[in-house]
Length: 368
Image 1 (tube, rainbow, N blue to C red):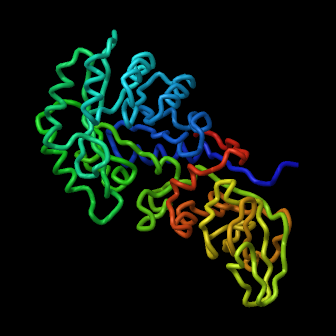
Image 2 (tube, rainbow, N blue to C red):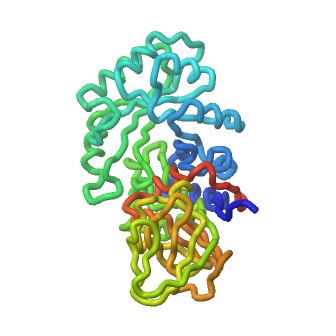
Image 3 (tube, helix red, strand yellow):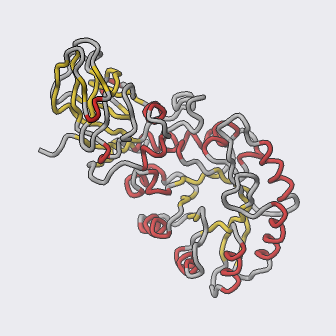
């Protein structure tokens, strides 16, 4: 039999989360962000549940080709734009919309020969200082684009750095309003956190929202709010089984480096999951896990192919018992991926994207 580990992609949860995001931003169109192979869920696997989106947003031209190959004829947006001038040829052929965030991308458009003008999203650096034109140069960039026959419609966008935190969005909103005052075109500002927290505001949701992590059932502002607070459902489950059980006596240690030492007699279970499957190696003792739906903890160091868990809360567990590393467990139990990520000192995004190819992945559920 195959090694007892698998990942499940829940189509019903993906569709539910997309509806939840849409409800949070009334009257706005919704990009389903499927970069990084749909945050590790797989574009082809997630696509049936995301077809009710108004468009797909991603980074990679190859991923754009995959979305088109699935039959999608609506908008596709390249969030980082073109990386070299010849990328514009594929944008023309596949009818891709693309972000313009620096001068040479405008230069490429000016030299591009195309029958059909391009739809572009002009990006403002409103304070995050990653991509985008500074406010002082934004209007001049818009003027250049508007004068090109290669460009059809110009939309205006920015990205919030602190929509999930105390600093908030007001400082960037003020910069965006001033830089775009009087300019025509649709607006796109809101990521998952801004959409869920501020989507009721027309000036935040704009014309397009760009939910990423929320679509996959992770809270964008954890730990202030968990996924259940936002009405989100886990779209990925990683589960395995116990392949051995050990009885420890006081003073016995577990795993490489002997980082865990038993203080009393206890049983530990050995799980067929390790860092080669995408589970974080730096997850330490105390990281939550479900055994037969009962919440317990990881003990000792994560190995390449195995990890060990405390069976004290699950005294009936034995070889073959189901272990939920994150997602949906037996009897309706749920282990939020954000809880695991926080215990491991990371974020749910990383856990999703790190799922290893060697883990068999199956699509379950139906799109309601």
